[in-house]
Amino acid sequence: MKATVWGCRGSLPSPGPEKDKYGGNTSCVQIEHNDTCLVLDGGSGIQRLGAALGTNYKEVHILLTHLHIDHTMGLGFFLPLYNPNLEIHIWGPATTIESLTQRLRRYFSPPLFPVRLSELPSEPVIHEISNSEFTIGSLKINSSYVCHPGPTLAYRISDGQSDIAYMPDHEVSLGSSNFPNEPEWTSGFNIANGVDLLFHDSQYKTEEYASRVGWGHSSIGDSVNFARMCKVKNLQLFHHDPMHTDDSLDALIDEYKAENMTPFKMEMCAEGSVFIL
Amino acid sequence: MPQQPIELILARQFADSMNMAAFLVDSTGNLLFYNEAAEDILGIRFAETGSMPVESWSSIFTPSDENGNPIPPEDLPLVQTLQTQQPAHKSIYIDNKKNKRVPITITAIPIEGRPNRYLGAMALFWKSKKS
Image (cartoon, rainbow over all chains, first blue to last red; front, side, top):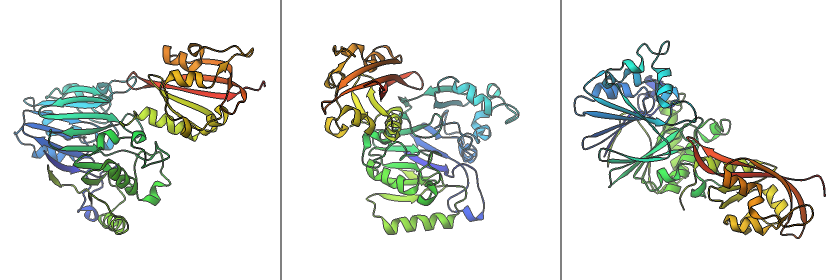
């Protein structure tokens, strides 16, 4: 599998010279394996992915974790949606009342966007999923609801040799008084357990999280503890706060590494990173 | 052990945060958790009982009516909720593990996750004012 990061900023695109190293585009990760192409989330990073996709694939599968705007804002600018020769599938979380198609129509309609969902030349196929297991091409996907406001999924993707977990928005410590000591009672454990590569929400510094409990995101310390519990091999700290500059992110991880030993690779995820598994 | 569904994780955390007694079971009736307030009423800590099947917890606390007649498991609100997936409510007595007879009022509710996933039930209960 090949994973390419097209956006790892949280909440709001925030480009600028002070963010060149880690990037300003919001969540989007591409997974490629043989002739299968997955796109994890449709944040602003999906625009560059669409321009770079070329003609390698006959179908593209967009897997949305949830429909918060920073994870969907790039969809309308994803060029493959305007290619009638491409087969596009959009997968996303089911809710109690409103269908995924209806919720996507809110974005693809005036005044938010000039082109309606029904007018997209690729005529995307919409799939609602919940705690699900399914196959796309040569990849096995597991999805599971995790702790974040509104229906939000995390994904585990396996090619039979390696596993990737994608959990960009996840408040991992909220559901357990005894975190990180009870895997059975930890949101997302099944998705991340033993994976080779984990993209995990780490929006806040520890001191910032204290005043933002319930907002749906994790501190770096909680992300690392979760990765340690799950025995992952590589933790990519993801969904950087739009207020955090390259310098502050570097200082944060340097400080954390100086005080904590981790038995796995750990980095601040950077836009443009490529992982071969 | 596999991870519980997020709805039950949050239900347990909700129960753990409350000052009112709460008792959480999965869809087959296995006891998952009860909180400190419930420990006080039941007379035994959750750490001492651990998880147990419905056949055990529905009789271990010896439920009875106001005349001391035993209440069969199928008439307990939480068991009814497990069977019907509907709320249930009742006032009963229990003989707790500290040999105290405690009047309690129970409200049991089903826990349903989206989309239409039945996951278990929670009973909230209070010491009744009559004694």
